[in-house]
Length: 203
Picture (cartoon, one colour):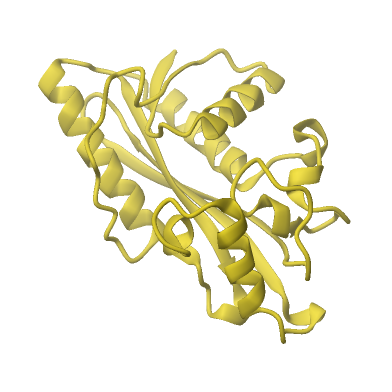
């Protein structure tokens, strides 16, 4: 089975590929770069569901124009911090400005939480996937990873907020834990639900 995963983010693509491999799921993943999709999509939704759908519809329109009939999966994901009323939320990728470096984003968030005690630094990662089948039928699924924000960042690298997120059941931030030890992330939980839907709606 083959599908288009609506991102040009290689880290996301590799994360999904590695997860499928670990689960013995035989799927071929195409990125937006693989299909030469270079359009700028304005993600102006107020929820993860809305933004994921906006991306899915834009990619579906492009695929229709070039005659590409593959399953499309898009995601919108972000970090929701309880003490910040759910921020950065849907603005996670633009929280410190467009294309801001990881360190700048992390420092901004930690500065906003500097007076928040440990017991109130709860947060969650959210990932919403939209699945559009070649016949136009669409579905939406959600995955979450709950945890907390430490006072100082851990090892930098990987996805933007991983150095300042400690998932429940762990003592280290996500960027310091090998993927095989981390278990199912919010994206992987959502992806498993997406695969079930695809298998039940094969055309």
